[in-house]
Image (cartoon, rainbow, N blue to C red):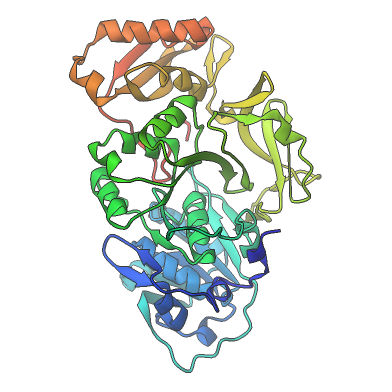
Length: 467
């Protein structure tokens, strides 16, 4: 059992720890953990906010981070609202979560239509003498799901569940500085934020509109040693000339299928780094990490005997039971989160090959080609192995005969792109032949298009039509 689960709040994790030189580093400001521990960033004190149900609605990640540190152990519930939540959905979130307090760095007038008791501004920590440190309460952490066109689902976690997969910070010969391409208001980014706080490590926050080259330069300037992101984050980073500016000790991937192409590319770019990919989801929590340099995971993980984690495959879908899982969905029409045995259906499809499970895609993203199923991620993994390809997106195109055909948008690496015109028919034919050698005919793209970039969601995943 990780030692941090005994902490009743984030602030308790900082108590009695040497915080010297440890910071939260945003593009526009830096805040020391020492100031966080001694100060307060909200316009109301602890007593006024005790027992509140608060929504953290901020423009800046730094403001959200400071609000989390102040509210945990004080509020009975806090809903972490991502910056990209559609404004028309906020009222439903407020109603279903029984929100009475909005904590924000925005203009309070922008929340005039919401029925809440108070709007509380947040800023940088200020000294807060005389404010009692009452015994912390257990705060519900509510995260929102992504990949939906309707109102996102609200997923309820406890702090102990969120940090269940975080072990004690190992002794290091040099200072660890964490960074993440994620937004900390999503599960993947929040995990890295919690690792930094629990280990009293500096953390460099991402910025939504920051060019990749500028972000990498900022990471290098901060001396980042540990970096987390989705495979799509990493593919975009490796396409940038300044990818060599950083020299991480540890590279972590999660959130999407980590295929062999991106693992090999990261190994070539950062030969001294430990490179691992982790399986996690907002509902199921952090499941497991794979550090052997190979895509997929050993089948033996299904047989591992652990009291805090178990998983199984049912009808091709991975199901997880974990001490790090969420407790329930929140809302008036909330559905059950798990089955009677405590297993959560992740919706991730896997396939067993020679003693190893490989992720082939999401159950809801299947393309139907004349009654045959195609997982876009499986085809992308093959295309991405082709020399000269940096990343790809496979999707369906309507067909009057068989319902749909498979097509692919492909981003070439810089060198290949410089020697290939927009048509590049010979290279397109070569990619299709490459797919034909590795895939059944119905999975082979009927057409390939070269594009300069692929759209990504704010969660760092490829933007798919079904998401």
